[in-house]
Image 1 (cartoon, rainbow, N blue to C red):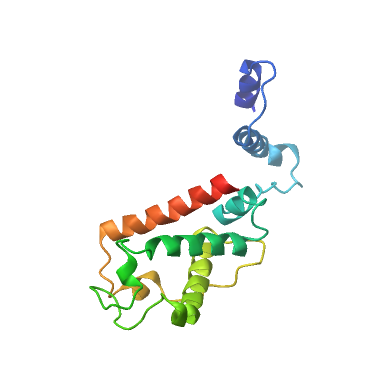
Image 2: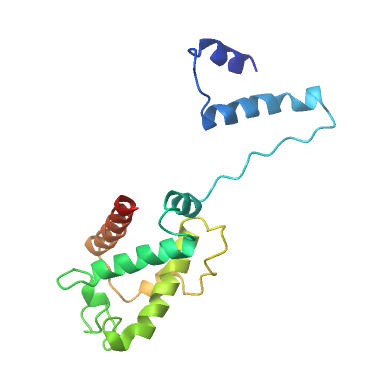
Length: 178
């Protein structure tokens, strides 16, 4: 409590408390709660919003739900990595190139159903990877582990980095358009 009082005395006039300051002040007060009020239970800190929830809030003007946002980001990323000439296209074109399944294409009109399943699984995976989406719009992830799904694909560091760049570029473009 003395540290919080000293910090408040040093604060310039017009100083606005930031969330971190409020949390530190709450923690300092809770240290003395039992001595002051033995019957009082400590106040738990509010749960931190997941990255999925923070992104959904940031894009609220463009997407109504987490599912809409993650689907748009997934479809946009997929378009980038399957464009002609992209280093990751061979993983999705059914050509049987190194580390891919010959005959299993996610491209073309005849692959719409397979592509739909892939997008749905990626959306649900990303929801989990981003800490969960609390709006209830994204179902549970039903795919395999990342190790099992990618075990025979021989993904290199350059491939991994290219995928991550595509995801980040898609998110950046979506933010600029929102």
